[in-house]
Length: 297
Image 1 (cartoon, rainbow, N blue to C red):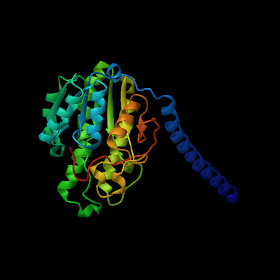
Image 2 (cartoon, one colour):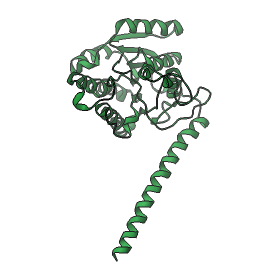
Image 3 (cartoon, rainbow, N blue to C red):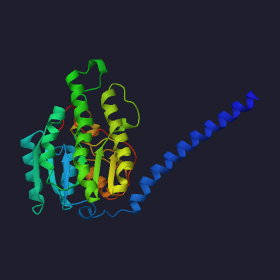
Image 4 (tube, one colour):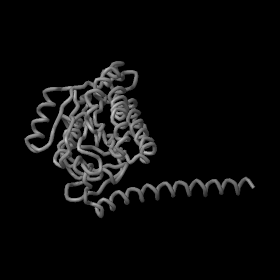
């Protein structure tokens, strides 16, 4: 009898493992094939609205995301802590897209709770159609939790978790009233497994993934789109420690390629890593750290 139970357990366990593998393969193939077939992007203004708010918008993926949205006729609110870089980014975007409006807001998300009341007032008259929660912060280099300065731990928590959560809260009420809108959250590969020596950073990205998935369930009935992006490496300043990762290719796209393909999927898919070349829109489930090392904008 015990032998029968043992073998039944082995068969059940093996079946679950096979099912898990098949599900993962099927999901990956789905995300590769479907975007190739369904390649045409949607009209963002019609589906979501005329305005987008982008945090961390003066470098890397955030800046590329802002530029790509602008090229599609979306007005922008750029949020960053560096006024000079904000003004430079605004000038670049308006020169390339003279028909859109671009507003800038200086905000340091590491300050925590104190900044959000002011941000809410600055955004209350902006009909936010798309919110891109891109801002993020990571360690200078891998280290044990006990070695990370306490101030840095608070900054990582405030920037990665606080900004995503509170910016979403600011925007989602008005989106719900209009019955349309999109929340785009930038997560990381560490959202899929623990990351020793980057433990706190990884935990914040797991939070963003879980938050996004729950948010999608809560608000889909109100007509809102919630997308959690989980790319692999992108050739930003974050990868300055590796010469290999500074060279763009099909596996390590530049921010412009990444943003273009990410936006092509907006309103179509919920959990994606759009990291392909520019001539097709295949997507691979995965994740990346899209922020600069201990630098956020």
